[in-house]
Length: 408
Image 1 (cartoon, rainbow, N blue to C red):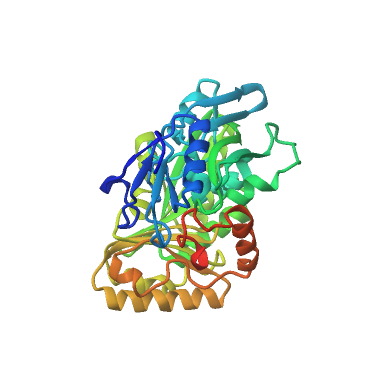
Image 2 (spheres, rainbow, N blue to C red):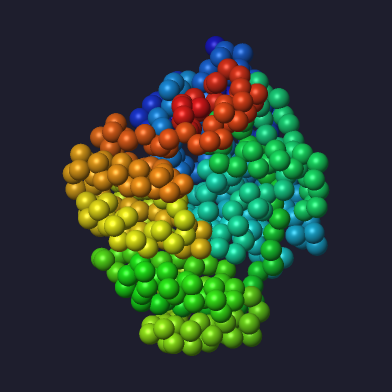
């Protein structure tokens, strides 16, 4: 039996084809705690769903009895503009937070795709990011406090409300990228940044990966400070986008300097208008479109090699890729032309990457590709520690069972 908070689930509650029996939609942290207490008493296997923008990430659950939706937890809990610190419930979308912060000329410097749907809890759980990670880092660098609900319904807190707080600071970081396998995120406290006075985006037609890398190296040598750099591949050609944000005079100066640097090494730059720039940085091509989506991590200089990505791109219809060259991360997407050949090419790519200390993760893939390729790849050296954390936080292995690395 379940309590008054639950209702029978349906197809809309499915996770990678698995339909749970029960669905919960708490409207307060106390209700979420009660929902987890109920599922603990009945030893149900549970998953958490926010905006669903990363629902395809991970392996299918080994079993699934209940889903807890977090969209009802969307309150702004506390906001101290003078301290550049905000606390929100985990079901609030990134767009909602940005709207609240913009009233005080501030922002959260995170920009993963689909901010109108992506919830803050989901962003933390999947370690989602966007091009501004170039300057501001990932969610780990901006998260300073967290409230979580353990598998038995116990509410716990870590971190604090001020950036300099040290006590318990590791707990927020432990939850980043944990994919809902350790606890449910209830609230999060973030460090904010002032909204920039100006923003300018320039695109350089680099054509090849090696030319893209030479542009990035020139930017680094000139000590320019872009907030975002991304190289986008479509139809066999690379375009490098560079965004500067800050005071108007500084942005104009750096944009002009970029133009000079590009011209010196043989490239021209195009400055995008606001709507064009927004479209370029929305990243919807590689991150959202395509039945197959891969996240590749390697040494920053490696992804430029044509022998690395080309064999996979050649087997995808509508192939595209977004490469963050300063981060050593690329997203590849498209529609598989033929599953068997593609699976072999992806496995070969993973082998090359792993041999050099990199990785390849399936963000999304058709069932026939998932059958041939493990979503996460080889277990990382830190896997023993990950297992100990799982045993400590979720000894019954009921939270998102089997979805994470190594079947955690």
